[in-house]
Image (cartoon, rainbow, N blue to C red; front, top):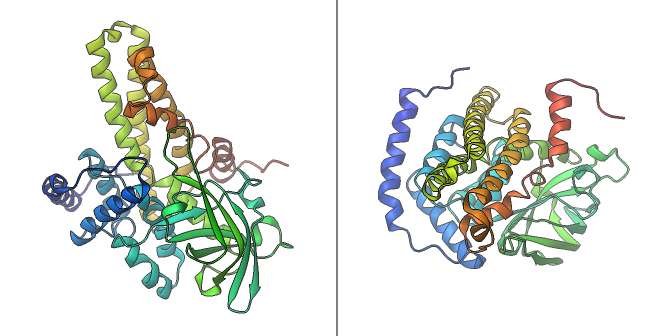
Length: 378
């Protein structure tokens, strides 16, 4: 597979760099990390700037390679991350673009792209962790609506969201994977209770969501009734295949900073530490090449990432944890105990990566069954 860029793609990169150089100095100060209403306003404002400049739709209305270039260049320039727009731009939006009707795309995608709507993800449940297909939230058909009762947890950005991509069980008698539907739920619907969950790193970016006879129109279903598991696999393909692109670039920058710090504080003299830094450099270089390969494969497959995203997710989760373990070694005990350090929050966050977006155990199952053709466990 050719991993080089065409002249047209390099021209796109140059235009984007020029625009970023002009736009970033004009941004207001970033809000406090604990101020989620402020962060919502800031993130939506940045998305509006991207939209007005013609870059708002790159997350799905562009080639996979253009998306890759966009994510790489915005991270290298220090541009704001998608933040509160994470689910809408990287999960729900691409899923609706791939699986929604013309009416659904026209209804939900423009507000996401213009920075007018925040989405959250209502997949996980207290009793359905890695085994997502065992979810119990029920949706009973009542005319033109579903009546939904249940509970979700680890619901990203629920307290500031306008919409939720929601998985529900619409046929409890069907085999587990065949009785699920994918719905778009307005978060201001009566019967929804949101309780924020504060993480070890500080911000409450997740929440519990309780659903008490919440009525959602049948027209808000993406895909056929009971076909939600297949639609969910599309969502998770985007989550595992392309959503971490900017984070790989950030990790490579962090690795460079650690090497410079080690040279400055004398820890570079430790040959074992130097080998760890060198191996991590090779690891993240290989991960970047894997991203390019997955993006090329997605382009050939119509834009939806395949099971190769699980290979990336599995190794990236571990590499990120190893990176911040090494950071603790470079900085030493005083730095490791300073919770105000930006890298410290990132290290605490890295602990969740072998769980988030599908546990490492689940990724191994996917790789074994879908890529290697091994039989399913009994």
